[in-house]
Length: 174
Image (tube, rainbow, N blue to C red; front, side, top):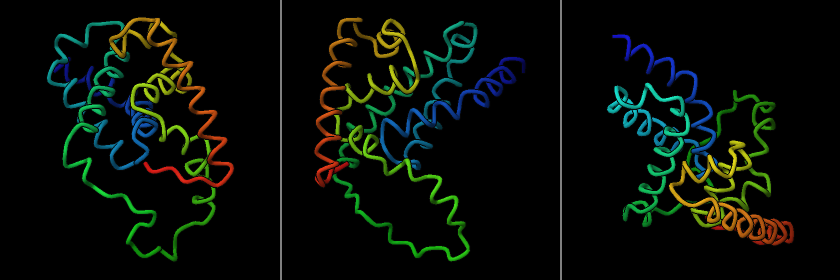
């Protein structure tokens, strides 16, 4: 029972940051929630081995990253088409202030981030949004520190180019 309580405390404390990272990886809040749920299920299954580590949060990031990459590789996901508009009708009682508060979702940087490849996007999210060191990012991604540095440099260059293109009116397919 103690392991279960420890896992609940871990999940409660880390789910919001995992959700934010998942959203930055995939660009879709609903998919981000699914990714976090799948990640937490995977961690729960191995909690007796994982829960004793000091680096449990880095392990969770690794599982989240691999879960997202696995999701991108699924054939049914590739054939799904994302349209610019949701086919729902707007809720007239919705608070406009809440909508304006979420304007950052449409930010140029976020759109440009979604235009990057998965490895570059993962490195940039882990390094600059999750504020991990080069060594921690390499550990989470399972690669060398040099790879993190080169992917970060290339990712930042591609991000600058994408932001420049978006500010000139180009559209990005997510």
